[in-house]
Amino acid sequence: MSGSDPFSRVERPKKTPKAVKPKNRWGGDVIVDLLHRYGLPYAALNPGASYRGLHDSIVNYGGNLPEMMLCQHEETAVQIAHGYAKASGKPMVAILHNLVGLLHANMAVYYAYIDRAPVFIVGATGPMDETKRRPKIDWIHSAQSQGQAVRDYTKWDYQPTTVDGVPEAFARAYSVMMTEPRGPVYMCYDAWLQEKKLDHPVPLPPKGFQTVPSPIAPDPAALAKAADTLAAAKRPVILAEYAGRDPKGFAALVQLAETLGAPVYDLNLRLNFPSQHPLNLSMSKDMFKDADVVLCIDVRDWERPTTTLTSTTRELVTLTPKGCQWIDIGFGDLNISAWAMDYQRLLYADQRIVADTTLAMPALTALLKARVRKTEGLADKVAKRSAAVGRKHTALRAQWAAEAKQDWDASPITLPRLASEVWEQIQHEDWVLTAGTLEDWTRKLWNFDKPYRHAGKSLGTATQFGISLGVALAHRDQGRLVVDMQPDGDLMFDAGALWVAAKHKIPMLVVMYNNRAYFNDWEHQIRMAQQRGTPVDRAYIGMDLDDPPPDFASLARSMGWYAEGPIDQPGDVAAALKRAIAQVKAGKPALLDTICQKR
Image (cartoon, rainbow, N blue to C red; front, side, top):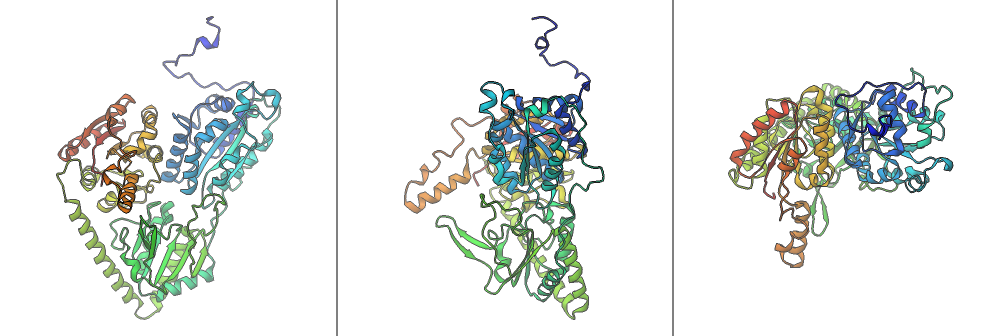
């Protein structure tokens, strides 16, 4: 081919050439101006021709800001943005190639929605101007109202019809995304709109524009009534789900619990409360059995901790006694979908206060402190209640420590032994746990003392590794040791995402929770077999990840990771962890394939 042919120079240069801004302005440049104005630092993507105009604008006009992060699948792109948002509190961009890329990403978008993660999803479509569509490909990859595919589980979607409509729609999308309760938005940009030369200036939103409205404050009278109810309570309990989404909420919940002397049950969709605080009784439902008031702080899943479930028959039994009062402070029925039932069973609360809990908790604490000062005997009652809860907390942690020693030297490795070995190596580091909690053994044995230690528990299979990459990205510049207790079944969905960490230099420690099975579902099949009298030893069919077992260490090494394993002897874990952590500190991702018991 001729040297003047641009396609003769398709090899990657040894050194990245400098960005050169084009002489003319193009439609995609306006989108880049907005990405810069709103401070969006990264864009995860899988390549696609429908946004080739925007791609060039980012690379050259924008100087690769936001920094492009190449992913092997659109789900991974959205999950990285999801994890970044959870860990940092700041949004990130995911770019999806027209209709097919959007459909690839569907599940990740849904999980970002139910987890209230602010992901700015940029989509594209073949030209709406039929005369500009390439034969076949622009037709089969485009749809009428493309945002309809995710409309039921995004906060807002829009497709500007002209380049002049781009700034206003972008500003609205950002505001909607970042207003609590937060969630993903989808902005779809016509390919020809991106590629067309601009013939006039397109003004951006005014610099003085407040990008996000102020948070919702609680009604003073309703909050005063809640304070009266709580002050009069004998056995109040606090239930928290998203209170810790903002670091201020983590500290505010401590102040509220200490003022009230009430135990806290942390649902762990975000890290809401320090794990070793004396008032933390998470993972023990006993406190609800004699509760006279349950205070829900930004909670939707109130039912799971306050009931017992017989899984086989699906029978629910309420734990709270008759006459127990419920106070719900949060976002109530805001931002629920008419399609997805993530809103769960309706809580018939006695008092319902719609408010941002980062404002409501300090205000409620101040009211309670005033009542403690003015009400004779209340301070003594709070102190005695706090001491009693503290004794239960101490007993619970001692029980877990004893349980962790059972089958200590067993092979495959027990989950508490693995959690203990990792904790022994990381406890003096500035560490972060990504998503998986190793069946809650990390929560039982580790000290979650700072709000950034954990972004919240994992959501479902095929979500954890991508989200973990985003969490690690959020903490990369702080030099923190990011740990992912990674299930084998989850990683099998997108093993290619291992390459993303090596490619984009995201150091993290992955310790495999490898039980060579989709064991959560295996357990369900055991229950069905027991109920129906069918062979329990056939429950593994369609569930095991064996014969052959995946070699995760070899897979990781092929993607540029440091890796060891499989490791099935617990005595070998500590030394392997030391070697892997040294690699992570040197800037390289590391994986240990540890073989674990099913439970």
